Amino acid sequence: MARTEINRSGEMEVFARVVERGGFSAAARDLRMTPSAVSKLVGRLETRLGARLVNRSTRKLQLTPEGAAFYDRSVRVLADIGEAEREASSGETPRGRLRVNANIGFGLHFLSPMLPRFLAEHPEVQLDLALTDHVIDLLDERADVAIRVGRLQSSQLMARKLGESRKVVVASPDYLARHGTPRTVADLADHQLMGFCFQRSVQDWLFLDERGETAPYLGATRILVSDGETMRRLTLDGVGLGRQGRFHVEHDIAAGRLVPVLEAFNPHDIEEIHAVYVGQGGHLPARVRAFIDWLARETKL
Image 1: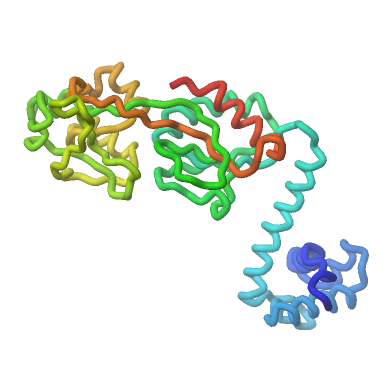
Image 2 (image 1 turned 90 degrees about the vertical axis):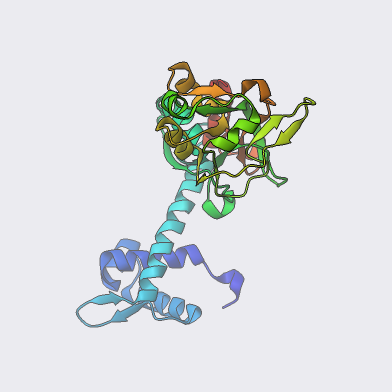
Protein backbone atom coordinates (compact mmCIF):
# COMPACT_ATOMS: atom_id res chain seq x y z
CA MET A 1 0.00 0.00 0.00
CA ALA A 2 1.41 3.41 -0.95
CA ARG A 3 2.32 5.68 1.94
CA THR A 4 -0.19 8.34 0.90
CA GLU A 5 -3.02 5.79 0.90
CA ILE A 6 -2.61 4.87 4.56
CA ASN A 7 -5.21 6.34 6.89
CA ARG A 8 -3.06 6.37 10.01
CA SER A 9 -5.59 8.07 12.27
CA GLY A 10 -8.23 5.55 11.13
CA GLU A 11 -5.92 2.66 11.99
CA MET A 12 -5.21 4.15 15.39
CA GLU A 13 -8.90 4.62 16.10
CA VAL A 14 -9.73 1.02 15.20
CA PHE A 15 -6.78 -0.36 17.18
CA ALA A 16 -7.64 1.77 20.22
CA ARG A 17 -11.25 0.58 20.10
CA VAL A 18 -10.09 -3.06 19.95
CA VAL A 19 -7.96 -2.51 23.07
CA GLU A 20 -10.67 -0.64 24.98
CA ARG A 21 -13.41 -3.13 24.10
CA GLY A 22 -11.19 -6.15 24.73
CA GLY A 23 -11.62 -7.85 21.36
CA PHE A 24 -12.35 -7.61 17.66
CA SER A 25 -16.05 -8.48 17.80
CA ALA A 26 -16.97 -5.84 20.37
CA ALA A 27 -14.90 -3.21 18.56
CA ALA A 28 -16.52 -4.19 15.25
CA ARG A 29 -19.99 -3.63 16.72
CA ASP A 30 -19.04 -0.16 17.92
CA LEU A 31 -17.46 0.74 14.58
CA ARG A 32 -20.15 -0.92 12.44
CA MET A 33 -17.59 -3.15 10.79
CA THR A 34 -17.29 -6.90 10.55
CA PRO A 35 -14.98 -8.69 12.99
CA SER A 36 -12.94 -10.03 10.07
CA ALA A 37 -12.46 -6.50 8.70
CA VAL A 38 -11.24 -5.28 12.08
CA SER A 39 -8.91 -8.25 12.44
CA LYS A 40 -7.47 -7.73 8.95
CA LEU A 41 -6.92 -4.04 9.59
CA VAL A 42 -4.98 -4.76 12.78
CA GLY A 43 -3.01 -7.42 10.92
CA ARG A 44 -2.08 -4.98 8.17
CA LEU A 45 -1.07 -2.45 10.82
CA GLU A 46 1.23 -5.00 12.46
CA THR A 47 2.75 -5.89 9.09
CA ARG A 48 3.41 -2.26 8.25
CA LEU A 49 4.96 -1.57 11.67
CA GLY A 50 6.92 -4.82 11.69
CA ALA A 51 5.79 -5.57 15.23
CA ARG A 52 3.14 -7.73 16.86
CA LEU A 53 0.74 -5.53 18.79
CA VAL A 54 -1.63 -8.13 20.26
CA ASN A 55 -1.46 -11.79 21.14
CA ARG A 56 -4.67 -13.43 20.02
CA SER A 57 -6.42 -16.38 21.63
CA THR A 58 -9.93 -17.79 21.56
CA ARG A 59 -10.72 -16.40 25.01
CA LYS A 60 -8.98 -13.03 25.25
CA LEU A 61 -6.76 -10.47 23.58
CA GLN A 62 -3.49 -9.49 25.24
CA LEU A 63 -1.35 -6.49 24.36
CA THR A 64 2.36 -6.93 23.70
CA PRO A 65 4.74 -4.29 25.10
CA GLU A 66 4.89 -2.77 21.62
CA GLY A 67 1.11 -2.80 21.45
CA ALA A 68 0.77 -1.09 24.82
CA ALA A 69 3.19 1.65 23.77
CA PHE A 70 1.42 2.11 20.43
CA TYR A 71 -1.96 2.27 22.17
CA ASP A 72 -0.79 4.97 24.62
CA ARG A 73 0.61 7.09 21.79
CA SER A 74 -2.48 6.53 19.64
CA VAL A 75 -4.78 7.77 22.41
CA ARG A 76 -2.74 10.97 22.70
CA VAL A 77 -2.67 11.51 18.94
CA LEU A 78 -6.42 10.95 18.61
CA ALA A 79 -7.05 13.37 21.48
CA ASP A 80 -4.91 16.01 19.77
CA ILE A 81 -6.77 15.49 16.49
CA GLY A 82 -10.08 15.88 18.30
CA GLU A 83 -8.89 19.05 20.02
CA ALA A 84 -7.61 20.48 16.72
CA GLU A 85 -10.95 19.82 15.04
CA ARG A 86 -12.88 21.38 17.92
CA GLU A 87 -10.68 24.48 17.82
CA ALA A 88 -10.92 24.83 14.05
CA SER A 89 -14.70 24.70 14.20
CA SER A 90 -15.13 26.85 17.30
CA GLY A 91 -14.56 30.25 15.72
CA GLU A 92 -13.24 32.84 18.12
CA THR A 93 -14.32 31.22 21.40
CA PRO A 94 -11.20 30.35 23.47
CA ARG A 95 -11.43 26.69 24.41
CA GLY A 96 -9.27 23.61 24.74
CA ARG A 97 -6.07 22.84 26.63
CA LEU A 98 -3.64 25.74 27.08
CA ARG A 99 -0.06 24.63 27.81
CA VAL A 100 1.97 27.34 29.56
CA ASN A 101 5.60 27.22 30.70
CA ALA A 102 6.82 29.97 33.03
CA ASN A 103 9.84 31.09 34.99
CA ILE A 104 9.37 29.90 38.59
CA GLY A 105 9.51 33.36 40.17
CA PHE A 106 7.10 34.93 37.69
CA GLY A 107 4.87 31.87 37.85
CA LEU A 108 4.57 31.86 41.65
CA HIS A 109 4.44 35.58 42.39
CA PHE A 110 2.58 36.97 39.38
CA LEU A 111 0.99 34.35 37.17
CA SER A 112 -0.53 32.00 39.75
CA PRO A 113 -2.39 34.74 41.67
CA MET A 114 -3.83 36.09 38.39
CA LEU A 115 -4.85 32.80 36.78
CA PRO A 116 -8.21 32.42 38.58
CA ARG A 117 -9.38 35.58 36.82
CA PHE A 118 -8.32 34.30 33.41
CA LEU A 119 -10.00 30.94 33.96
CA ALA A 120 -13.16 32.65 35.17
CA GLU A 121 -13.23 34.79 32.02
CA HIS A 122 -12.63 31.76 29.77
CA PRO A 123 -14.51 28.81 31.30
CA GLU A 124 -13.89 26.50 28.30
CA VAL A 125 -10.08 26.70 28.60
CA GLN A 126 -8.22 23.94 30.46
CA LEU A 127 -4.80 24.94 31.83
CA ASP A 128 -1.58 22.92 31.85
CA LEU A 129 1.04 24.98 33.76
CA ALA A 130 4.71 24.00 34.17
CA LEU A 131 7.23 26.11 36.11
CA THR A 132 10.98 25.97 35.45
CA ASP A 133 13.86 28.42 35.19
CA HIS A 134 15.42 26.39 32.38
CA VAL A 135 14.74 27.48 28.82
CA ILE A 136 12.59 24.89 27.09
CA ASP A 137 11.97 24.15 23.44
CA LEU A 138 8.31 24.99 22.86
CA LEU A 139 7.93 22.41 20.10
CA ASP A 140 9.62 19.60 22.05
CA GLU A 141 7.54 20.35 25.16
CA ARG A 142 4.37 21.01 23.13
CA ALA A 143 3.91 24.31 24.99
CA ASP A 144 1.64 27.04 23.62
CA VAL A 145 3.22 29.92 25.53
CA ALA A 146 6.43 30.31 27.55
CA ILE A 147 7.36 33.20 29.85
CA ARG A 148 11.02 34.16 29.38
CA VAL A 149 12.92 36.43 31.77
CA GLY A 150 16.09 38.06 30.45
CA ARG A 151 17.61 38.47 27.03
CA LEU A 152 15.82 36.60 24.27
CA GLN A 153 17.88 34.35 22.06
CA SER A 154 17.47 34.72 18.31
CA SER A 155 14.80 32.27 17.17
CA GLN A 156 11.77 31.82 14.98
CA LEU A 157 9.48 32.36 17.95
CA MET A 158 7.15 35.32 18.24
CA ALA A 159 7.45 37.43 21.40
CA ARG A 160 5.34 39.97 23.25
CA LYS A 161 6.87 42.10 25.96
CA LEU A 162 5.07 41.94 29.30
CA GLY A 163 7.29 44.26 31.30
CA GLU A 164 10.76 44.69 32.73
CA SER A 165 12.48 44.67 36.11
CA ARG A 166 15.85 45.82 37.34
CA LYS A 167 18.18 43.66 39.41
CA VAL A 168 18.80 44.15 43.13
CA VAL A 169 21.10 42.65 45.77
CA VAL A 170 19.19 41.65 48.89
CA ALA A 171 19.77 40.04 52.26
CA SER A 172 17.62 39.27 55.26
CA PRO A 173 17.78 41.52 58.34
CA ASP A 174 18.98 38.50 60.34
CA TYR A 175 21.88 37.87 57.96
CA LEU A 176 22.94 41.54 58.05
CA ALA A 177 22.74 41.56 61.86
CA ARG A 178 25.12 38.57 62.00
CA HIS A 179 27.52 39.48 59.19
CA GLY A 180 27.25 43.23 58.82
CA THR A 181 26.02 45.29 55.87
CA PRO A 182 28.42 45.57 52.92
CA ARG A 183 29.16 49.22 52.14
CA THR A 184 31.38 48.76 49.09
CA VAL A 185 31.71 46.09 46.41
CA ALA A 186 35.02 45.04 47.96
CA ASP A 187 33.16 44.17 51.17
CA LEU A 188 31.49 41.27 49.34
CA ALA A 189 34.66 39.23 49.88
CA ASP A 190 33.53 38.81 53.50
CA HIS A 191 30.04 37.59 52.59
CA GLN A 192 28.33 34.48 51.29
CA LEU A 193 27.10 35.08 47.76
CA MET A 194 24.62 32.99 45.82
CA GLY A 195 24.61 32.32 42.08
CA PHE A 196 23.01 30.01 39.56
CA CYS A 197 24.30 26.59 38.58
CA PHE A 198 23.15 26.86 34.98
CA GLN A 199 24.71 28.93 32.21
CA ARG A 200 23.30 32.44 31.87
CA SER A 201 23.60 34.92 29.03
CA VAL A 202 24.78 37.66 31.43
CA GLN A 203 27.01 37.66 34.49
CA ASP A 204 25.07 37.36 37.75
CA TRP A 205 26.81 40.06 39.78
CA LEU A 206 27.25 43.46 38.07
CA PHE A 207 28.12 46.76 39.75
CA LEU A 208 29.18 50.31 38.92
CA ASP A 209 32.93 50.88 39.26
CA GLU A 210 34.66 54.11 40.31
CA ARG A 211 34.28 55.45 36.75
CA GLY A 212 30.55 54.82 36.79
CA GLU A 213 30.88 51.97 34.30
CA THR A 214 29.28 48.57 34.69
CA ALA A 215 31.71 45.81 35.63
CA PRO A 216 31.27 42.23 36.90
CA TYR A 217 32.21 41.28 40.42
CA LEU A 218 34.71 38.45 40.02
CA GLY A 219 34.62 37.07 43.55
CA ALA A 220 33.49 33.53 44.22
CA THR A 221 29.89 32.56 44.81
CA ARG A 222 29.77 30.00 47.58
CA ILE A 223 26.23 28.74 46.93
CA LEU A 224 24.81 27.79 43.53
CA VAL A 225 21.11 27.14 43.01
CA SER A 226 18.95 25.93 40.15
CA ASP A 227 16.30 28.65 40.17
CA GLY A 228 15.39 32.09 41.45
CA GLU A 229 12.78 30.89 43.92
CA THR A 230 15.32 28.69 45.70
CA MET A 231 17.67 31.68 45.90
CA ARG A 232 14.85 33.80 47.32
CA ARG A 233 14.03 31.20 49.98
CA LEU A 234 17.68 30.82 51.03
CA THR A 235 18.04 34.60 51.20
CA LEU A 236 14.95 34.86 53.40
CA ASP A 237 16.42 32.15 55.64
CA GLY A 238 19.58 34.24 56.17
CA VAL A 239 21.95 32.01 54.23
CA GLY A 240 23.59 34.76 52.17
CA LEU A 241 23.26 37.56 49.65
CA GLY A 242 21.28 37.07 46.45
CA ARG A 243 21.05 39.20 43.30
CA GLN A 244 17.67 38.83 41.62
CA GLY A 245 15.08 40.57 39.55
CA ARG A 246 13.31 43.15 41.68
CA PHE A 247 9.92 41.75 40.62
CA HIS A 248 10.82 38.47 42.33
CA VAL A 249 11.48 40.02 45.76
CA GLU A 250 9.44 43.24 45.66
CA HIS A 251 6.86 41.98 48.17
CA ASP A 252 9.59 40.80 50.54
CA ILE A 253 11.30 44.19 50.41
CA ALA A 254 8.01 46.02 51.05
CA ALA A 255 7.32 43.75 54.04
CA GLY A 256 10.82 44.21 55.48
CA ARG A 257 11.72 40.54 55.05
CA LEU A 258 14.58 41.46 52.69
CA VAL A 259 16.77 44.57 52.55
CA PRO A 260 18.44 45.96 49.38
CA VAL A 261 22.18 46.54 49.76
CA LEU A 262 24.86 48.29 47.68
CA GLU A 263 22.20 50.33 45.87
CA ALA A 264 24.76 53.12 45.30
CA PHE A 265 26.65 50.69 43.05
CA ASN A 266 23.60 49.21 41.34
CA PRO A 267 23.92 49.60 37.53
CA HIS A 268 20.14 49.23 37.24
CA ASP A 269 20.51 46.59 34.56
CA ILE A 270 17.13 45.54 33.26
CA GLU A 271 15.61 42.11 32.73
CA GLU A 272 12.86 42.13 30.15
CA ILE A 273 9.97 39.68 30.53
CA HIS A 274 8.33 38.29 27.40
CA ALA A 275 5.66 35.83 26.42
CA VAL A 276 7.01 33.75 23.53
CA TYR A 277 4.96 31.53 21.26
CA VAL A 278 4.97 29.79 17.90
CA GLY A 279 3.19 31.33 14.93
CA GLN A 280 1.92 34.71 13.92
CA GLY A 281 -1.03 36.44 15.55
CA GLY A 282 -3.55 35.82 12.78
CA HIS A 283 -3.00 32.07 12.95
CA LEU A 284 -3.00 31.59 16.72
CA PRO A 285 -5.65 29.40 18.33
CA ALA A 286 -8.20 31.56 20.10
CA ARG A 287 -7.16 30.27 23.53
CA VAL A 288 -3.49 31.27 22.94
CA ARG A 289 -4.32 34.69 21.53
CA ALA A 290 -6.72 35.37 24.42
CA PHE A 291 -4.08 34.34 27.01
CA ILE A 292 -1.31 36.49 25.52
CA ASP A 293 -3.60 39.53 25.25
CA TRP A 294 -4.74 38.97 28.84
CA LEU A 295 -1.14 38.64 30.10
CA ALA A 296 -0.09 41.87 28.40
CA ARG A 297 -3.09 43.67 29.89
CA GLU A 298 -2.91 42.28 33.43
CA THR A 299 0.85 42.06 34.13
CA LYS A 300 1.92 45.06 36.16
CA LEU A 301 5.69 45.42 36.49
